[in-house]
Image (cartoon, rainbow over the protein chains, first blue to last red):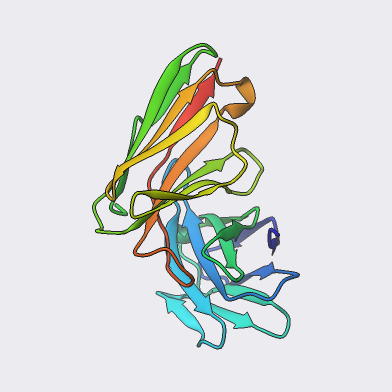
Length: 109
Length: 114
């Protein structure tokens, strides 16, 4: 049961904000967020646990709405280094992560 | 640098060849994973190992054969592959196998089957 990510792509100017959403039709235990730059490994950003707090990685934060089974990733005051593809991975009742199709973020000067 | 290395980074092989992909993690983790990343598709879990024991084979064709000789090393042996197997193969590790553990990925091996 792969989560649905939106939008597929977003283009920003430095300093602008953006929100990426990750939705599941199943009850989630956790949501993981990763960023992958071209030709590089996906890098772990943060994990949101059921009943847990909003998390933050530098100026990137995320929340988890258990009622909606949706997580949102907030890119605040975007920097050029934020460019890449962002993936959410959702965890149900075991260790397996199901990944979304990704959101490509392009930050321009 | 995520603490997970993969070799080779690029591989071109014919359909009759046999090759192996190698993954090594320097994090002291007990669980390791193989994923396939194809263009325009989400990451697909292939195999999972915990303390060198395979705990998951996600309906992967037998032309892919994993091996985990110890908790730091993971191999993916390839033979008689098909062109549709061309993809980026990613290795990952986590501290333990269970809920709530983040996974750390290697840079991947870009495989092209001709």
